[in-house]
Length: 220
Image (cartoon, rainbow, N blue to C red; front, side, top):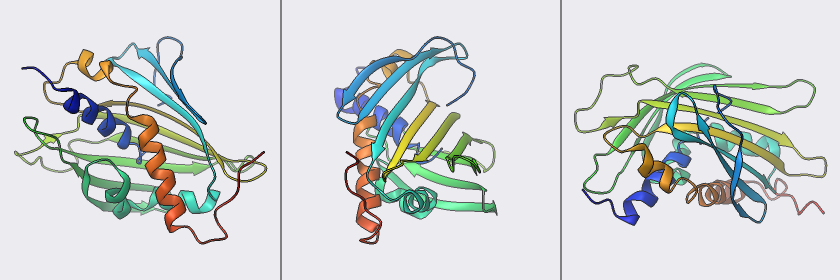
C-alpha cells in the first residue's frame, strides 16, 4: 500500500497532539536539532527500546503560567486543540494531581480510527515552581472498540517553567506508537512536520480563553 503525504502528515500531527496530554524515558543517543522556527526548536533521538524516535520540543509562550496549566488540565477542551481529537472525557479523577482520561482520533481512510486511555500525573517543584506532568498509555484500562485501534504506547512529559519577566518556558518530550501496522520508518520519515503547528494551536487556545490580564507581552 502506498501511503500518501497527507496520511504521513496526519500521523505526525496526531503523535504530537497526544501530548496535550503528558519523555525522560530510557533513552539511547544524543538529541539532534532537526527543525527550528522562531522560538520553537524540535529535536529527535533514537531510543534503544523502540524503532520510533523520541521527540523533544523546546519553546516559549507569552501566556500566563497558572492559566496555561488550567488549559492543559481541562480534558474536555482537548477536542479544541488536539489535532483530529474527539470525544475527550475524564474517566477518573484520582486526586488533584492524578487522572485517567479517554480520547478518540479520526484517522484518514484507509487507516482505522484510534482511541486511547491515558494515565496522567502532575507535580510541582516547591522551589522553582516548575510544573511537571507525565502521561502513559494504559491500553487495557477499558475494553477495546473493535472499530478502533487502541493506542498501545505513549510516554510523554511536560516541564513548564514560569519566566522571570512573564510567560512560560516549555520542555516537552515524547515517545508514541500509533499502533496498527504502520512501519516505524514511515512514522520517523515525517516526525518533524507537526510539532510547531501543534504548539501554536495550544498557545492560541490559551490566549483565546485567557482573561485580558493573563496574557503577557514579549520578554525582551
